[in-house]
Image (cartoon, rainbow, N blue to C red; front, side):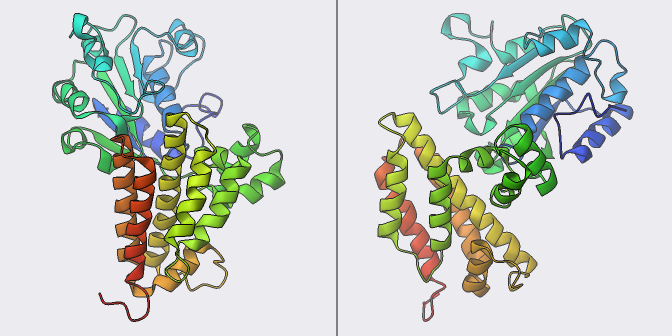
Length: 361
């Protein structure tokens, strides 16, 4: 069994660790996986530790353990292992370019992840490839992966990391085993908030954790006073009775403009707003499905809005979630940010208007 020390930085995913142990024990390790879950819950850390365990030279692979001392483990620590390829969204880019997979035009099919994964391992039994930010694969990049996913080289393992199933091509989904990563529990999140110095102490972590959706990424955003202020102001106003597109547009625009004149920074702030609202209505949907939002102890904007939306709560939440995903896609396609924000809020207003007294549905 892997010791707590070896997996010390992977918290809250014991079930996933056990799943891989069982797969290895029974010789059922797949050739391609899709790690799917919110950002900031540990998918990347888990993938790197899994790669280290599979490449370790001193342990039985069935134990899903790693020694930390062999040459392979030392190379992993130095981020320089010859049998591991790692690709992620390049700085300043919004899509994963095909060159990362096939090489540039002068070296097509001679470089890149698809070429490297096809080579024989240099040190051990396997070659691994980790594709972070798989939500941002282009159609061309996705298509060039298909042959590798369909006919993986012996011993090769590919792991894709993504936050949104809907942003991946069906051909990618059908060729990968999906491993879902859930939001971190309150106990784990509070521990990590202190350990990673996002919160000064346990008391501050306890105050912050209920607002973080089980994600360290959200926690880091909320540690920014401007972001915290926006969330506390915005979420209660996403209700039919007080939804005002004009005031919401003005306030969100102010927040986006605080990023300065750099287009990518402004785009990231607007994307974060879309994701914040999506996460909020995901909670509305959860409460509506469970039917427990009338509990007076649930003093939250999501519970209040689920109550106000009443029989329309599930339908409205799903429609808004779809619109938030669509807004992110439009943002990636260089839509004018001011126009996109106005249209997005108008569409949300139209969806919520169907729940008002006397509305025609």
